[in-house]
Image (tube, rainbow, N blue to C red; front, side, top):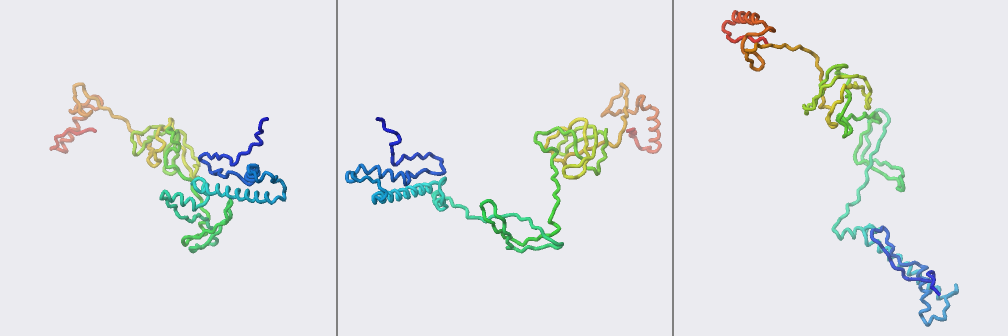
Length: 312
């Protein structure tokens, strides 16, 4: 006949406690297990062979159950004390202080919490709230209401109950670190005279290599994210600049005057220094006769002047 696994009873059971647990299964047994183990041990004592231990009014059963209760309590506190021996499982603050004290660590003392309050005042005159004024919060989560006190006298003005927060302007030309091509720029409406079709020079104050020439395209007035009005200036080709270039360093200039070129032609046998003739004879663009007449006038008014006049 094969023994049934249900009839097997092992007491106490073997403990298996792996590492890294937040709860240590240290209690070896409870009241039912201790009671069953003591009843099973009766057969090993010859003096108790005639004791059947089955009646509810049996005095011996009462004593046996009392011992099972004591063993249950002892096993429970054995697990509780085991928890206090490790940092991960310790539940008493005193146990934590003793454990870290072995390493020379001194915990920081408790610090009171702080909170920022928004106070609204009525009327037209400023109000001074004295130091020590208490404010009671509402309950939050499982925490009870808390009382906070002012650390110093606080000045409150009714006209400052509400403020309109302006949107923050970006300090750089771009906001995305991966951007480097910009097809348009936003200009302030005042002091902007660039028109469509103007040639525009875009340059950075601290980076002259980044100078670029573009043609102004469509110019429209838009409202920015901060609520201000701007002129949106587009270009015929994107501007290539690093995204983190400060806006204050970008300059746009456009020409306001124009001029033609004046070319001077030398004779084939005439040497030149820095593009200017060394003698007073000019070719078809400036007749030699005109130069000689001006030399006569110079000698008339400046007889001691020996240097030839410059026509440039």
